[in-house]
Length: 157
Picture: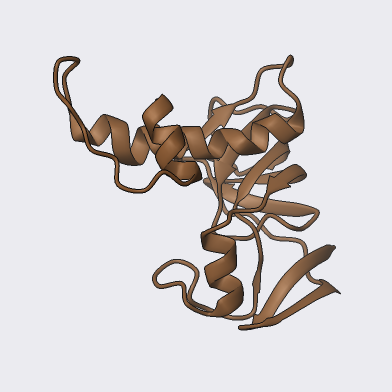
């Protein structure tokens, strides 16, 4: 399959790579749309990302909307043809990617476009990583430091 790969910091290529193989609890997704993250993708390209994306070569992109084309033998409640939005550390600027079935994902309704779907990962991430864990109450005030895309989405959530 074709993929946009960061071979090493500062070197971006379009190349053929093997299609991902899934395990028992994973889902294979045909990528329909992937968004560019102004933070993570930039840091991966520059070689300044720490933690999940600090290896090379790697397929760029992680905010994705796609269609389920295969499920592992232990996957439940996800059907072939479902459209999902999710974050993946396996890359999204490619034809197919995979995600763990227990990972945070959301079904995309029919009336939403694939392009809108890939942006849902940021909303879902803001809720799961920022809003829900904070346990703030309606009467409390919160300070959001940084009003970039994620800060604005956290504010909206």
